[in-house]
Image (cartoon, rainbow, N blue to C red; front, side, top):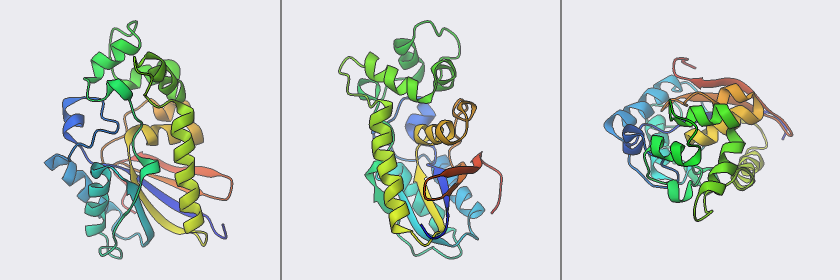
Length: 222
């Protein structure tokens, strides 16, 4: 890469499974009205960023959020996001669609209070939870950490190759993926708090390094 990339990573807006507190994964659930508003709000905060390219997960909640962001942008309103399957959410196997508290209990019945994803990540760590979920999934189809990072790293390399001259890039993805970025490129504590719907994280991407500039931000106007 000739110049660093400014990678603006946004979590999709609220979906019905977010509202109902269910594990979502590869389930392709629509945005709520609040979720559409999340995308518009993120767009107004990024309105003055001139994006060289725009990417999203191939799941509709991310793609639709990207379109809402772009409609507010002063430079890129006519752009179409490119869907990248490598950035879709973690596949949770047989836990997909189940209530979050029920799923946490199945993974670790010793967690009796605050049965939320935060609690189990705080106990084990971001990647370790994914490995545990694959182990606990009766079908063992849930993605483990190595499977997730294999595809996510492939997606990052694709973006780097397509944008070798640097610039500002928008990427709309999912909460677990962003938590993973926080733990991998920052510290474990970044992954233990929920990623807000429409929250913006900014990463500086160099040849062999990714630096966190801003993480899980719901206020900054760029």
